[in-house]
Length: 89
Image 1 (spheres, rainbow, N blue to C red):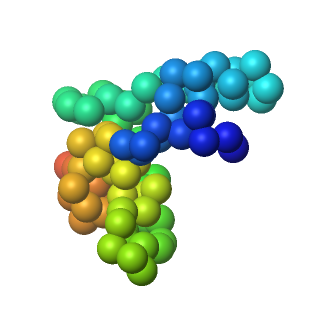
Image 2 (cartoon, helix red, strand yellow):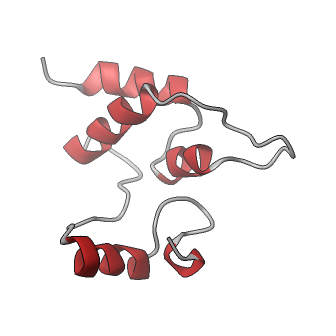
Image 3 (tube, one colour):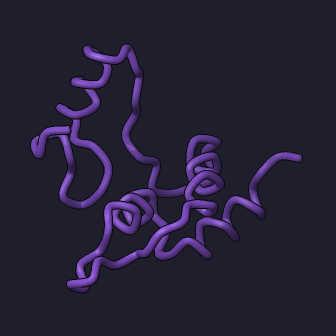
C-alpha cells in the first residue's frame, strides 16, 4: 500500500478508500469515533482480539494503536470492554 493511502493518524485516507474501491471493489467507510454504531462495535470486537504490541521498539505507536485511536479507543482493553457492553447476543 502506498504511503499516500495511509493516514498518519491511523486508518486510510479518503484516497486510500477510493483506491480499494477501484482495485478491490470494497466499499470502505471512514471510522466512527463516537456512539454505539454497529460498525464501531464490530471494529472494537475485531481489534480486541488482535495480538501484537501497541508501540514499536523506538516508542512510536504501531498502526494497530493508531487505528484504535482513530476509532476512539485508547487501548485494546477499552475496545474489548466497549464491544462486550454493546454487542447483541
